Length: 264
Image 1 (tube, helix red, strand yellow):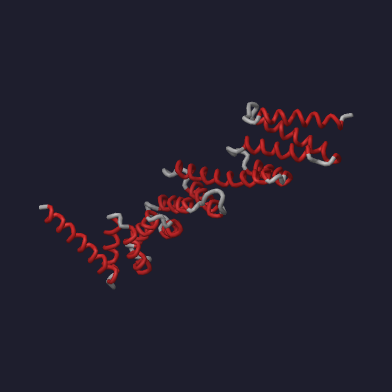
Image 2: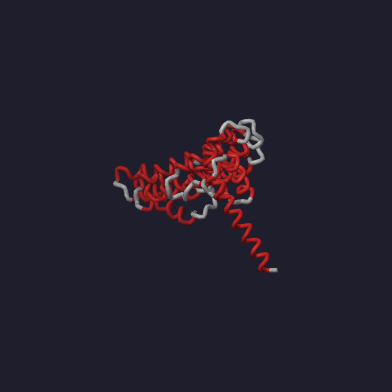
């Protein structure tokens, strides 16, 4: 009985493979579409793609095209070919604006671009593009069933840009380029006023101001000490019990002590 079942399953597999190969070689686009749909329904997306690629141009503008291009885009998405799925979903939404799937396609198109976003340390062009695409979706479909997920994706992407900008500013502090660090943190705080890195940014700005001030020539020291004091005030105003309170207070003691020489 086991041999019979095994033999039967093998026959099914071989028949299926044979039919697929015949469809690939067939000149009949209807045969290809039927085979592609069968593979798609079976979750064999890579095989479905090979057939969809062959027949997509022939079906453009025909009644069957809507289902075909939807499955084509989904197949790319399921196989994590996100550049292609993003393009195909966008094309679908453009070609079939009255389709019942247009909202889903617009969302998955935007989400495809978000999947291309690299780790924060790399170039973030794709992240910025994904944010734009997702924001366009949110603006167009403010009551979408996908809105919550769209907002979550957008927030995650935005935080990636924030982390990159924060780490760049912090790196200036690390290499003791304090002027550049102060400017970078000012830009960061201006660009991302609600950032989750605000406390850290305010601290490292204080640290940069402080180190720049205490190592300044006398003619520039007073102004820079006052800038450092202002940076301290900004930190404790934002969060009185900041985790950096002890070291910040030590900086303030030195700042005020050094300022006394200019008050005589």
